[in-house]
Image (cartoon, rainbow, N blue to C red; front, side):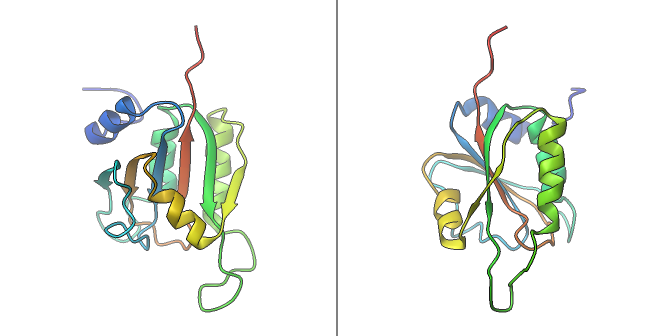
Length: 149
């Protein structure tokens, strides 16, 4: 039995095979996983029931296992039924996790089509499907390099 924060064997395998600059998508329950899966991405489904598991919970485990050099989020629509005036609540959780893990990254905001394009790119090594109910609670991580000892 492992005693690390991250225990999921498929996620550990995909992260172990990914390298510097590879991407990891952790997406909410509204993300179109079947139509936006990158051609090289392993899909791991953690969507057990509504709200279980959240993106922040998955991010917390993943961030404990890899160096993060970048993070992109889906910028909310400014009009229409899914418009938001403020940042999605999940973004503050993401920032807190990055700070706790020592990842000095800012959230890069991509418009919706740009985020979908990036999240389904050839450099995405892993896509984690969660059951997060929050709007715009998606994060696309860029894996950094491990520093020499």
